[in-house]
Amino acid sequence: MSQSTIKIAPSILSADFSILGQEVRAIDEAGADYIHIDVMDGHFVPNLTFGAPVVKSLRRHSQKIFDVHLMISPVDPLIQDFVDAGADIITAHVEAGPHLHRTLQNIKSKGVKAGVSLNPHTPVSAISHVMDMVDLVLVMTVNPGFGGQSFIPLLDKITDIRKMINEQGRPIDLQVDGGVNVQTAQQVIQAGADVLVAGTAIFKEGPEQYAKNIAALRG
Image (cartoon, one colour):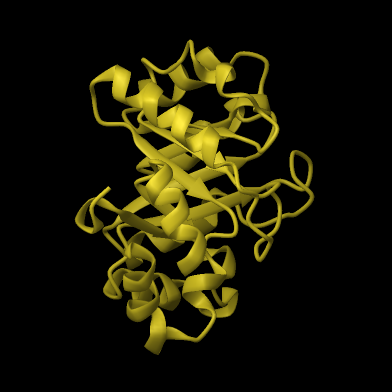
């Protein structure tokens, strides 16, 4: 992947929650391509973050793509809420409901892009029969639930999914989330990723450094 094709999606999970709107504006101005919004329910993952009302309140702070990662189960009943809140992409986990195909149909029917996420242990084969429906595949390189974890080197998995995407012959984002920093970013880009989610690596030094940190991840 060339540097110009790599998109950076800062995860606001690592932002200062007391000034979240201001933080979203800051990463927008610093060159973020997507705003990555991690929604956790304390059930599917061991943490609780924010719901649709928070997403709706942030929408006026940026026109960038709202990339909403739903780490919740069951996921289907809440899809409409996040569409109404202003999501542009909604990503659900393979394990978040009994019928992944139906979940993706539901997302697509709302006029937004559909993503599917694979936990570290989830095999690539789990999405082989929904590739015709997805606009984004998210490979988790940590166990979901908390920011600041160490990168799990699932580079072969990323490469295998890149091949699946290329066979589709249409634009599908290959996103990697978990432990992404300047060093691991280059590994996942070489493996085939083109959208990098990063929290700590972007937000760690305050707003004055956001643009520098985003640029560094692009390589």
